[in-house]
Length: 541
Ligand code: C2O
Image (cartoon, rainbow, N blue to C red; front, side):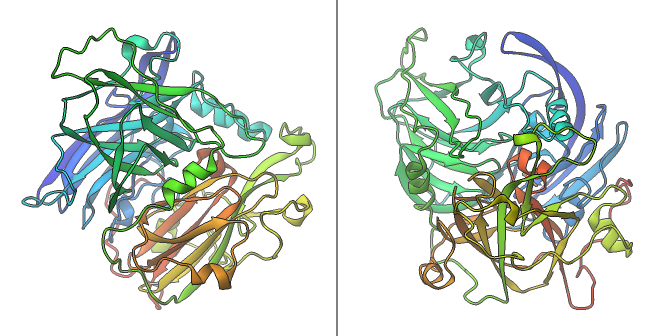
């Protein structure tokens, strides 16, 4: 195993997009940021220096961080932010994970431009368990672009209580592509050779959109999601929520030409602003004399509300072999996830629906990040008053979660409420979507763990009939699960990683509104069992 050292300098840089020049925050002047590649078993050491004017932290999305919770990165959860002029070195080892993950800023909306791929190759001497070993690899980061400064966009929304402005473009590797103005000449080209196979690592790094992804005239063989291998299956379209990754094999078996690679929103929500645009890159056959002025063929993309296609994709995912799913559960949790509207505080004017303010909650708790300590630091040092451990195991009120019910049923309390898990316990969480304000999709991400998705469905979860249908044999393993719009998903994992672990909706607008909680995983005597000591350069608040 090797140790890889990297320097990340967070700095402003001016880039041209959609006909204008914009000043954005980048890592090392790159947008998207640098791709990190290493092998399962290697150690990564990344020194992050903040030369920008905003606080920043970096999160290594999907890395298990076994006993290295200090390196996880969410602001005010495992560390205080790195102030302008400051630095912090993240250090962690890849233990058993292979495939495609990514890293991103975990501070306000900085991740709009501060993100990149994190690729974990098989251990030295071993190879992919795929039906075909790929000749080439390419990384496809799907993103969202704002002409305005994304930090201003979210600060404005926080102030007014309204929904933030939607983005101005979707992007592939930072480029909107051919179909947007002034973007053609920078459209990303992915070269392939006839009859060869490529491994495409597709990452949804968009802030607020689930995305359909497809390539004209080509099939995709899915081989992994969220850095866990899957039983291979072939499809023409995949769907990814923000935070999710999907590895696909693509064989260049079509007449040599140019084909569009395309992504656009799977919005699915009622009442949500829907952006009807499509980002494209070009799959170009290069071993023959492909005429590079041919207009590429556009694929058929599902409609923005095509839930059957999204469901058909996610329910086909399976672990490759019999999985080690916990057969019994020590902790059975039921968490509602959803949006709501709060009354505007006295003397303020709010610009949410009917003069209200948007909110979001899990089990009626709207999560608030602390500001004087990170939760992990406060817990480690025994500082009181930073958080409480009274997050409820079930919602305080039962009702028809996905029906048309009165908004007065639900008015979230705010707080930094955590749930304590006994180290080593097996945990099941039912994630139940609600329709208080609107029926929305929620890609829920758990830090520090991979989990099995043992079931998903529509309507209200039924403990009896739905539990009987769980897949406890070969469910897919993920770090981010899409709770179906107007439905539920159930996850299981063993709490074998001590620390403080955030769980949240990966739509950044929803985390802003409080759709989050966190777990403390520790042993019975209150210690963070065998967690390493904090690094000496850990930022203080
Ligand atoms: Cu991808 Cu809490 O993050």
